[in-house]
Amino acid sequence: MAVTSGVLSIPDDGHAGHRLTLVALGTYLIDGVDLTRLAETAARLNRWEFLLVVAPVPAPGSTGFPVNPLAMF
Image (cartoon, rainbow, N blue to C red; front, top):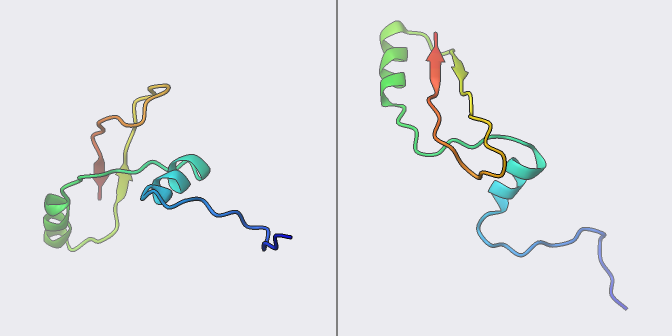
């Protein structure tokens, strides 16, 4: 007789975080963003809060698409 806590284990293939955020939470992931200019601008303005706008292109069935993030102070 098998006894479990009711929680099923998913094998760790190194993509569990992506699977959780993309599929379960519907969150977009942004990789490879160079934030150097953003940090320099924030320091120059002495402002550390900003609006980040990222508008992904709706591409049904795709798993990734280039975006142009825009930070507004």
